[in-house]
Amino acid sequence: MMGKEDLSLSLSLGFAQTRHPLKLDLNPTSSPISNLQIFPWSQTFVSSSDHQNQQFLGKIDVNSLPSTVDLEEETGVSSPNSTISSTVISGKKRSEREGTSGGAGDDLDITLDRSSSRGTSDEEEEYGGEACRKKLRLSKDQSSVLEDTFKEHNTLNPKQKLALAKKLGLTARQVEVWFQNRRARTKLKQTEVDCEYLKRCVEKLTEDNRRLEREAAELRALKLSPRLYGQMSTPPTTLHMCPSCERVAGPSNHNQRSVSLSPWFQMAHGSTFDVMHPRS
DNA sequence: CATCTATTTGCTGTTACTTCA
DNA sequence: GCTGAAGTAACAGCAAATAGA
Image (tube, protein in one colour):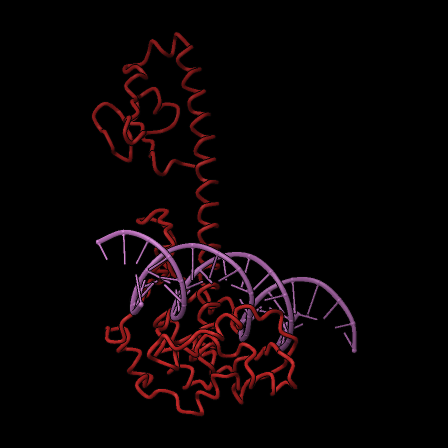
């Protein structure tokens, strides 16, 4: 079984979704998320000849396509070292749809891929003619290899999928499902991290807002006091807000993070006021 | 070249099973 | 042994990309 620690190892904003990229760039320079590991393989590999694929090929020989025995595995014979139980299948729409597919691709193994483990005739025979949904538990070794492979590539091309399935004694469909679920878990974990970060941002902004409102009220009170206002060497109107960046700045230090304030303000609040890192 | 259709692939949400406290 | 929660394998449905007609 895989713990949360395992998941956290693989968190990445670079989660490769080529069609639905996760675009959440909250703060590229200071976000805690930026500390998370960005995998070098986050770009999806499509061609079997690219570099990442070759790295993968170094571990698994994808050129040796599954034998006849492997094809039999594809039809639902599960790993001998896996725990198997069965239950009545919930639905077969996809199986029916995909079971009729095939023939268009030049790689039969790949074409058969999605129709495997979906209540084929072999499977039905194995479970007494009743369509069954097998729920197996992957062994530690299988999970470990899958996890290692996922760390290198979070998607697999058909050849890699088949090779990995062969290596693990699983069906290509099982490998595909595992990777789908693994990507989903990664994304969920990342969403949780992003959510926590946004929460902290909201809390900080809320606090900043409160503090600024307090300070504005104090400034208004000071301005209404004729004695204090008359002693000011610089009128409070020397504070400006930049219309573009909306930062408060003095007359000569536009866009600086630490803003020098008028003496009357320093009296009340100290020497400087950091716009981005106000004192709490 | 534009359009249509079939196929593939990944994502999301759900279901069902396993494990564990 | 029972139970609920958490984890996860397997699935359905959908959308987007792609290839071929």
